Length: 286
Image (cartoon, rainbow, N blue to C red; front, side, top):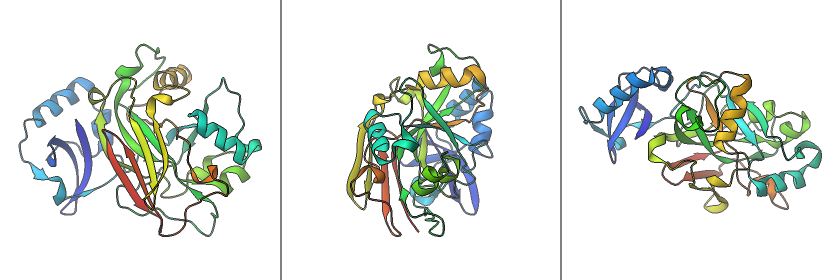
């Protein structure tokens, strides 16, 4: 299944794609309400909606981020593809070298996530090294606490695309990543949530990013150093991951700071992020 948050006639709707390009509305106020619903009840709602009552075309609406305002900060993995780890360490060893046996976690303030076609603010008054990072984001469908590797899949509701936009000068200058990763508009997300049953486990999906039509990043999502079961297991041992939690699993090599000289984003640049089976997230820097 594919689930969308859309704007239609000055209303915001949560919709299920019942067939290609055709949506039907769901009885939830926001995607957060859907994700927080009892899983059995939610399953029944989705099955009933799948019969296609009250369809309208995807082209008739404006697609928003599937979760425009996450309930909590997004949890992110740093340097979770081997080649990206190498390029980050080369860019700034003091800021990026980490123990290889430990995952790097950080959180990303996501006050209002841009959707497909929405602009990314450049924050030129603060940022001189704006960067892009295409990532597979995992969305949990129920509260997770003390989860085993074997049970991790059952807590995943679905997946979306996330662009972990980054201000490298703030990220490296502050010796922590929260400020440089969490400026307003730095969490583009979309176009939809694809439910877990549509994707192999663990996901092995081609992932790519282009800037102004130039292919910059290309990998497969099963190349993660720390897998999705690793992540859910480890984090849930010490904290409760609430339903609706968004986990960005890391970015492949090819980000702007990885080039010599670096290829940072400029006003007017268009970033196209794609994960096969999920769709395309495209945004322009303003």
